[in-house]
Length: 464
Image (cartoon, rainbow, N blue to C red; front, top):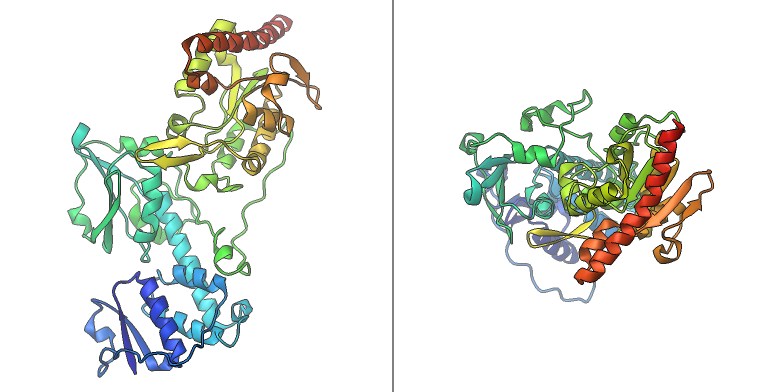
């Protein structure tokens, strides 16, 4: 009998290496007991001692298992079940001779490992949804801390998500199992603590509320999740990635079908529906969906590219430097900003982290197409006379194809539905121009383009 002791609850790589060696030595699962360093002695059967070193493998024999098993095992190994490593070795042992075993849904071992992976994934999504940072200290000494009680061993696996999202602030996620810390450069881990050791905040949770809007706790939310919340929000756990772990034969919980209304679309309902959009991968790193804003009676719709860093945190479009330049240009052109509906072709912030900064990344065609449903439904709800596409991404969304700015700029274009479109540059383009003289000239061209919209707005006002 072999007793294998892993270094930690999340020591998957050691399990993988040891399991392969055991299998190559033809050591059956019944002959192996798996344990973890620091596990209570009573949890290990009496009479067992640490397994001696395995003898050298005398043959060149090897074996392979499906790639989706490794993905499944890596996630299932984070489950809190003490028998998970034994279960995974049993599956590995059987997969050597039955390569299609994972396709047998009714198999008890397959079903149990799959259920473990799904449960771990739900816990990771719950952690992303409910973490609420509290500010500790002030100004340069400020640090942000959050308390969380995980169901499984997910903290080390999920911590990089928070490092990407909150790259510009030092934070700690404190749990009873292990604590994760981010100093702006690297993630570190320390032993878990009790909730009584959680530092008291010196201010209200203003920072957290700038990052996440509140959502009511729905009756469908698991009651056990509420232990992490104090009037916080919880989104329904998402299983979209579970299918990827198991080679495509797990059916995730179906999402509610998108409602396809025409003029009856209500902006508030659309905004709420878009807040849960999972049509592309951008939602995973963005803070929130940034939907369009403006009066439903607007006869002009301005379409930009995507929210930037400031918009992603605030939850409102065009509130950063590009938005300030847009406001100034609209005023100079004679467009009443309060009577214009402003939105973006893509509703989630796409970026790459560079230290403490999140650098904007241009959306690609699949991402634009995935988000076009929201643009179409905004048009259906607003019924604007003129749509102003600011930048190449916006033009691609408005026209449904790649549309050059230079060839189409500054003139009214008929759309298939009878509306008019106007193509111009995005205000962020003006901010990036290095030459002051060129910046002045291009800004004036931008104002001249917007004057076309101003003329239409004034004409509509006179008609009313």
